[in-house]
Length: 134
Image 1 (tube, rainbow, N blue to C red):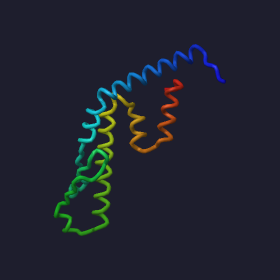
Image 2: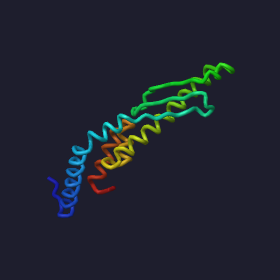
Image 3: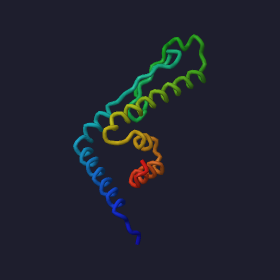
Image 4: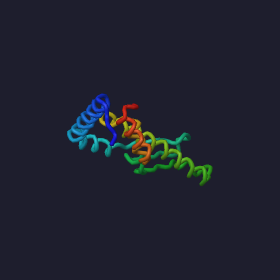
């Protein structure tokens, strides 16, 4: 069985205290922050101004407006690419706003990793924090 020195135990106790405080803050503020995050909507225009999109907090498309001027030079591929690129930019901005909402409770790098669905990196970040590497 591995033994821990006094410094290790002190560090672990400090980390446990930090986790406890964070948990208490999440209990107190979590519902409000969650509601605030769910209400986020981001609108973005395409570079040529012919496409306008609004996405929700998860990057889902909520609204799409296409200027009738697109019919002057019909190009389905260019229109599709414009829509896709505009939705991606709006979704990235929504993700940034989500990270800002939760930043008081969750470090931005951990939140980004979580939003990206990268569980392995998230666990590594948490383990590093527990070991005092961050």
